[in-house]
Length: 94
Image (cartoon, rainbow, N blue to C red; front, top):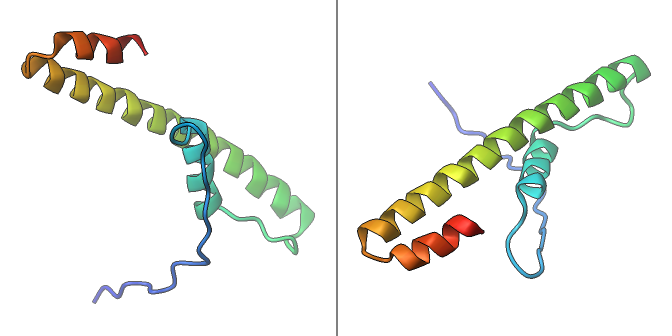
């Protein structure tokens, strides 16, 4: 039987000024949550883990950017369908 893990880790807060977080910041937050390298890890293992972390950061960033682009297309499509072509155009240009 599946049992949910109630340990979600320590809470933390990340803030942003003048808008939301960039795709790079979101990817970094995600990878920081998924991959941690212990200070006590053997040096050879730590090097491999950090290299893996950097590879995963690139993958997560790529998919975050795709998600942002796809969401923007969805919003533009909804605005055009609602007869708000001017507003849709403004979002396209950003």
